[in-house]
Amino acid sequence: MTIERKPAKPKKCRVATCRASFVPSRMGQAVCSPACAMIDAPRHEPKARKALADIERKDIKVRKEKLKSRADHLKDTQHAFNAWIRARDAGQPCVSCGTTADVQYCAGHYRTTAAAPELRFEPLNVHLQCNRNCNMGKSGNLLGYRPRLLEKIGAEKLAWLEGPHEPKKHTVEQLKAMTAEYRAKTRELKRAAA
Image (tube, rainbow, N blue to C red; front, side):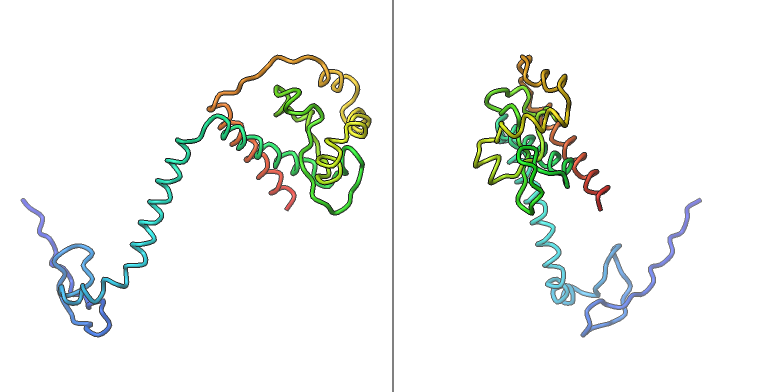
C-alpha cells in the first residue's frame, strides 16, 4: 500500500510584473519560469553577498587566531584583566593620590609586571589608578600607593605581595581561559552596575 502524494497547490509568481499562477515543480520554487527567475535574482544578491562576507570574516578571524603567539595571548589576557580591575574598582578614588576627579583611570600594578611578572594577574596587586598623573607621570606613584594599599588590604597581605613568589609561565590555553574568565567577570560587573 502506497501513500498518495497530494498535488502541489498553485502559487502566484513572486515577480511583481508577472504574478502568473503556476504549479511549483520543486520545493521552495517562488517564480514561474527561468525568465522570471532572472528578474527575481538581483533581489537576493545583497543577502548572498552579506552571507559570503560573513563566512569570509569568520574564516579570517579563525586564521588570525591561529597566527597569534603566546605574547599576543598574554596581551589579550592583560587587557581583559585590566578592564575587570577598572570595572571592579569603578567609583573608588585613585589608590596612589586619592583623587576622584573625572580623569582617565587605569589598572595600576603595585609590583610592576617587569619586577614581579608572577603577580601580573594577582587582584591584590592591581588597583584603580589615575592614568596621566600617577601611573604614567609618576611611574606608579609608589610613595602614595603603599600607604593606601596598606589601608585597603592590610599588613599581612601587603607583606605577602612584597615577599618572594614562585615564577609562573602560563600556557596559551591557560591564557585563553583567563581571558574568557575576566571578560565574563567584567560583563557581570557592568550588568550589575546598570
